[in-house]
Length: 408
Image (cartoon, rainbow, N blue to C red; front, top):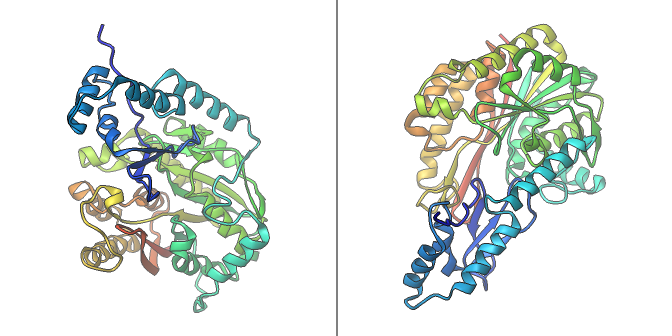
């Protein structure tokens, strides 16, 4: 029996090393099954690429020999694979045990803890309030027209603060109207299962306190569309697209409201087939259940979409060195607006066609929450409040927006 080396886990974060005297690739686990962060030296990058479950130790050693131009000793390769194994980066029994333990810990937690406090935003309530106040000082002309929802970024507030301000300043004066209501938060599931929607009954904790999840609506959706739902989805424990919205909502409204947090998985089957997402029974059932919930609850619901738009540059697999609002990114702006115009007009079919064309070279990670909202709240129309682009690193750009939505 051939003894193949174990496979490197998929969906890991891999970036150029930020440490000047340690060149190579930085590798980390976005799921946080392991907290280890490794820097892979340049000589081992070719070995990393061969950890696909189909290569033997001898084959990898031969490749490394070709790379350095002389016989590569086996001992450093043993150590390299062992470090990856024990750190949980390979598909092995060690990783399976780590994953099972993390899932069990999340299931046992009474709350969804703030996983990005102290990183994406301050973990001190005083410092958090001061920083968000500074972000939200942007003057937004008063608009008395009623709205049923907003879209805001889920990028780091440091980079997307102007769009966060444009979206959440729209809630000024709505605190009394939203007291006791349920805010449905549709967030991008960066790590979740395709064609699935991740729900949890856990309340969300942040430096501002605890926000209760509307368990009755969670249970109602489970009864109506359970096949399309991952309940107590572990992805909630590490996902930022909903957590950041909760923080901004608390800053604007206090804690007198409930949430219905929904992580929207990618519509992979639609991208591959070119067919509308609702062609699949599970996705269609979930859309119909959300639409029925909207009809029943009416003004008791408010909608928030945690979305980013395009992802362009070397971090995202593009060869170019992307610069916000320069060169190709000016064309990206035009294409982003073309899509947003269809969203504002409520044309879900036309929006879908723009996104799936050529398998979405813009890599819109907010597509699934936007499309889900358009199916659940039929007839809603929108307006773009703000659009922006940000260099998340020297060669990669994320675009994002602030939008508001009203009924017919």
